[in-house]
Each structure stands twice: as structure tokens, then as C-alpha cells.
Length: 403
Image (cartoon, rainbow, N blue to C red):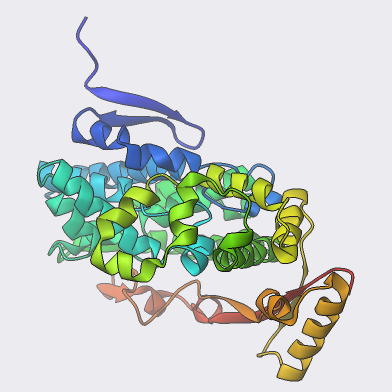
């Protein structure tokens, strides 16, 4: 019996996902990609939504599936896409999040001196060497340097397959049903003009619904106050661990490279050394560090570790504008007294942060609409987007609930 030319994966969102055997399955089986199985897509959001323990591995497969459907739909409509472009776009989306670490945004602010986008590019270049240049075109698409821009837009734009998958997937696993979007209708209304993506006029309401879902998911899930506090407390813990290496109980070996070294120079001089260490860390290492730190003799480290392990987070206080310094100092003094911490530790712990979001940016790579009467116009010319173009900004601090 001949072997199947495709690998079949059963996904809870889309059903069966077909992956052609060859370079795509080789990349999926690579340690860089398999590592994503051990990294949660939503980081610490499971403290709010217990079902939110799905992984970046699942999201990458889902985005790959939507990319495949998009390209197949465009080909059925008669748009020319050659086999090399088809596969390169699939590779670009499959690897688009491979540079994420555990609790990605927290690590970027505390331990890892390179953001996940640049890490992704470093990893793709590393894989390209291993696969003898087979990722050249995929890297061009990922970097938005390929002339046929619709391929780049499918990977990253204001309406791309990455966003369409994570909205549907995160909505499913959190149970926040308002985040679900009609991805099928949007994909079927897709076309190409002058090598750029356009959408049929009758897709406008579905696109508007997508923007509404995105805005809701950001404030209700991604920027949820409990998640923000958990992330802040973990970030402070990791920063403090880096400062207090002599007072740490034995940290996981995979994290020691990041805790005990100044990596800014290393990232610039020897990125391969950084990559080898980065490949070894995942959520399990951070969780093991929390358990280890819960027994630390350093007060702030043990306090934060135990808070994170037992889900005892600070309360969050929002403000429309920057907090006055007198107000901030007042909260710091109360925290210092309540937790019996040093002034330096309190300043590290009680900091002003902010969250911001803009559902749609009319000044950046607009979604284009193919109309019957006016030709191709911008989405902002087709419907009123005032509600989505506002940049929403909230300042916040966290303080102990006892205050």
C-alpha cells in the first residue's frame, strides 16, 4: 500500500489539516517548531480563562491551514500563484511565531534582549542554512520584501491569516464567543489587484465584525486586568532574579544562561550562541523557576513566586493620564509598609505601566475594497471606522490588595 503524500492533523477549530510531506513536514518535525508545543499561546491568561492552555504550536498549524485555504481560493479564481510561491507562503506562516519564548512579552522586557520578531528572523535564517537555502523566498515574504505583496499581506497585515486564526482559536479556548469571526466568508471574498490583496464589497460587514471581535478580545482577554498584573509580577520577579543571582536557589540549567549573563553584547556579537540557549527554554522552565524561587531567602523573590503559584495578584488601578508622582510615591510607601520591603524593591514592584490598542490604523497598509461603482477604495472610505481608529490608552499600577 503506497504511503500518503500528506500528513493529516485533527484540529478542534478546522477539523482535518492537510500538510504535504516534504520540507513542510520536515520543518514541523524540527526541534525549533516542536518547541512551540511547550509554549502557551496566551501566556498567563489561563489564570482568568482556565481553558486558555492551547499552544503556539496549535496556532501555527491553524494559521498554516488558513494560508493554504487562501492560496487555493485565489488560484481557483484564476490568479496566478506558482508552486514555489505557494510553498514559500506556507513556510512563512508556519514559522511566523517560532521566535516566541515562554510568556514571550514578559521575557522580552526582563531576560531576552531581542524581540520575538527579530528572533523569528534569526531562527528562519538558521533553518535556511540547515535546509540549504530552501527558505530564501519564505524569508523574503516574511520580511515583506517580495514584490508580490499579497503574499506578504497574508502573513502580516491588518487582515491576515495570523489574526484570523488567533481570534477564532483564542475565542474557542477562552469561551469568549464574541471573538469568533466569519473567516470562511472573508477568505472567499478575497482577490488580487496589482499584486495586492483586495476584498469584495459584500465582505465589508464581515470585516467590520472582525474588527469588533479584535477590539473585544484585546480588552476582554489579551489586556484583562488580572493577566496584566500576573505578567507584571512575573516580569518583576525575573528582573529581580537577574539582579540577585547570588541569593537564588538552583535555577533550571536552561535559564541560567539568561539569568547570569549580560546578553546585550552577546546578541550582537554571537547570535548563534543566544539561539542555542533560547531553543532550550519553554514554559516548563519558568514554572520550575517559580517553584524554586518560592523557597528563596530574598523576600521579594519568594513573595512574588508564591503569589504567582497561588494566584494571589495585586489589584490594578487604572488612570486616564499618567499618575502624579505624589500619588505613585504614596502607593509605594503603603506597599513598603504592608509587605515590609526595601525602598528599592518597592520602586521595582510599584511602577506605572500602560496598555494601548488601536483596532484599525487608517495610516498603515489599509484594507482595500473592490466596489462596483467606485473601483478599489480604502476600507476607511467604504464605512465609518471612527470607533476602531481611536487609539485607546490606559495607565495602570498594581498594589497589594491589603491596601
